[in-house]
Length: 344
Ligand SMILES: Cc1ncc(COP(=O)(O)O)c(C=O)c1O
Figure 1 (spheres, protein in one colour):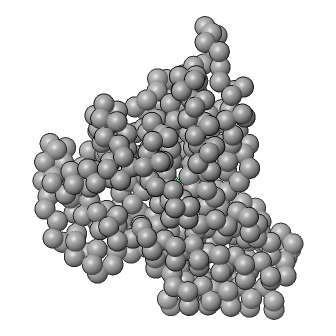
Figure 2 (figure 1 turned 90 degrees about the vertical axis):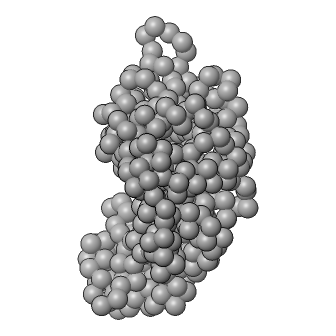
């Protein structure tokens, strides 16, 4: 059976053209800084964000964790929103590998404000942990692909400068925020000290994320990447897919956003289903089925039998994500399956 796979934007498979780029890639040993394709990808990414340097890493988790480790000392404190990926879904690596203490803020649709963060910044005192990092997630996965407003990022940047903190951006889906808002990537690059951005989500590459920042930071991050086992060899074969993704798959994200909105609006009309339409800002739709009285596991089972895949997202919620392997017709078929399962 061919499934309509809305579990995540990570499920995309490399296209024929992307596979050709992979096959044709020039390679070398990247741990020796000898892989021309990786070097090209790194230069290209740094330029896109208006920064000095970038580093290719295998995953978004490694990207975030390499950044956090590189800019902190054990016992330092990191402030982030309570739904953040680095807090909930990265296997406590920031605590285990970097010794970071988390201080979380309950935001609204993934957005915390500078005013909420200000009182949490510790005074310099022999008894206190040292507040070191503020981490922003844009777009915010758990909140449903919501966009972190640029003005609030700017306010957090100013607060960080005032207090001597560093700003990390988990930009796994920063491309979606960029396309949905029209805000240049250089603006995001300007407001964060360190960034981790993913090639393997909406952009459709099979593997890979990029760490971005100034030259000195990226030099040090290269060392941390090696420490974490992320030094890779003839990895130009993967970097080539990343270059292809950056050159071809950013502008089209609008289609995913339109499809997500189509799904969200139509599904919200089904009895027993609630979709917070204000949170549908990019390619993620979170569907609350509490009012239907149905169990998520039972509903997902019924979907699967009919050819639709989605994931559980909390006790009563289902997450659907649109991506480049999902067409408008697939969304129409997915809606039909929802209707069959909920209206019969
Ligand atoms: C916001 C965010 N950051 C980081 C990651 C981690 O990426 P990876 O799965 O490549 O480790 C994800 C994965 O979905 C994510 O949604």
